[in-house]
Amino acid sequence: YPAEYIRNFSIIAHIDHGKSTLADRLLELTGTIDKSATNKQVLDKLKVERERGITVKAQTASMFYDYRGHRYLLNLIDTPGHVDFSYEVSRSLAACQGTLLLVDASQGIQAQTVANFYLAFGEDLTILPVLNKIDLPGADPAKVKTQLQSAFDMDPDQVLAISAKSNLNVDQVLPLVIEHIPPPTNTVQQPLKALLFDSWYDSYVGVVCLIRVVDGIVRKGDTIVSNHSKRKYDIAEVGIMYPEPTPTTSLQAGQVGYITCNMKTVSEAHVGDTFYRLKQPVDPLPGFVPAKSMVFSGIFPVDSAEFARLDESIEKLTLNDASVSMQKETSNALGQGWRLGFLGTLHMDVFRQRLEEEYDARVIITQPTVPYRVVYANGDSKTVRTPAEFPEYHEMASTVSETQEPMVSATMIFPQEYLGAMMDLCSQHRSGEQEHTFIDESRVMMTCKLPMAEIVDDFYTQLKSRSSGYASFDYEECGYIPSDLVKLNVNINRRPVDALSVIVHRSQVEFVGRSIAQKLKKVIKRQLFEVAVQVVAGSRVVARETISATRKDVTAKCYGGDVTRKMKLLHKQKEGKKRMRMIGNVEIPQEAFLAVIKK
Ligand code: GTP
Image: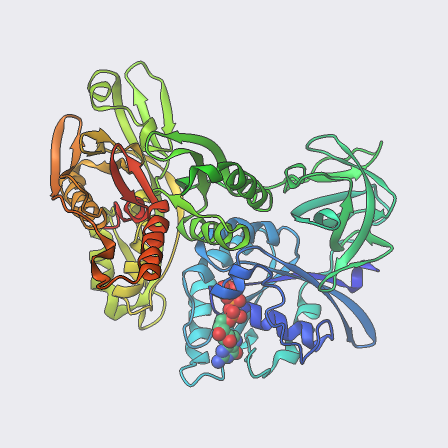
């Protein structure tokens, strides 16, 4: 396919601004998918994506479009809109020459609009602004055009206004793409150089790699080499996503498509890797900055007999999600499990949901922790990803010179009437100096530094509720600062329960300690004996609650002698027990591990 008739583009947008809907419309318009198909949101392939209506993994689809006497091959690379997944966004952008910046005309520019704009700008892409949802009564295209002008210096006359839902002006989108986004460079004569930008495991054909061919051509039967591992692969199939994998005879410079080869596991498909033809090595492409885990959490099977099966499920799931980091972990309370690192709390939640739905796994997830740093008096330092790795009280005094916590620089956009509420919210989460500017006459953009630990919790939920849903939020990490950190341990009837330990800032010790003790009191059922819950910092008891003894008899309510009903209830009680963890002789329900630090 001649490069001059190829366009590689993506759509970037804040979450819910209509990216997947527009993608569907473009695929319909080009006849790539059936208009009547009930199978909407073609690009959102994961079940969790459809259910939650969010894009998690970037997807790719090719389409053909006739314009001014020529047939064009258009490759659309979808991107996630949520703050946790900007790693996926930069990955997709590396495969394009241009992007549509889609903005909801009723909501205007939001935090991820700003973040995604700068990602695309940094990649030197052509950025075409498009307003969506102009059919909504609340749409104010003129105002949003002003925002685009003041935030990104865009010409208001160059902004296309559409409704992806009602199809208004959608027919103008592809002509815009063809006329303004440059074609990829035509370097088909040069030796093969291809960028691997995504991969997944398919149970029929094995590993499928999405590649962008930068130079040269690749065909079925070719032998290629991974620059990263120097392993050789024989290509079994090449093709384009149309929108399902569709074989073609070749992929050439400028094209985006898939290959299958004798690759055994997705771990061999190193995202950002460069492929070249056997015996024709090339200078590798720059690759990607690896995804960085921001949030670490322990995952344990509810029933320890399920360890092996869960191990397999986690393995499979992480194979298709290279951004999850994993190591084994053992807890005295929860037994064998894993410490997983995620890009953010939504990412963690999506992972848990997939584990439960796709692999039918029942798991306990412990309170997420950010990576803290401990500097020792002798000059050594280490990163601490779990409370268990944090020095105990006596070590702190004798060997540790400083503890540090990671910070983020946060951006929030909201209507001006919420300025007070947002300033309070940030101050309550230990923010540094706050700065704000107006992006139009009624909307404020606020920036400040926040400890990362403060945003992995319920910050996002509070931001949404205190701004009636109007505030948007984005952040990026910005290094470590010295911070006075304390580890709180929880003892239940004098036995330490390591999985309940947390690391907090000294100013929060009393408050968090009391709230942990109270929450545990609520979720731990009364036992046949008295249970003491203590939260301690070193040897000092910060908070204490007592759960008095009781006798639990679930059959007491069955008057008369209905034996089957009695059996049913007893069985139910047994089922309930399965979801309990015995700590010493105290039963602790699964919820306890989650409830601990939700402030
Ligand atoms: P993420 O993938 O999570 O980033 O979301 P998205 O940007 O792909 O948004 P999506 O296409 O799922 O649309 C979000 C919601 O907006 C859906 O309920 C759509 O039906 C609705 N929507 C999309 N386009 C329009 C439009 O032009 N007008 C109106 N009224 N609603 C729209």
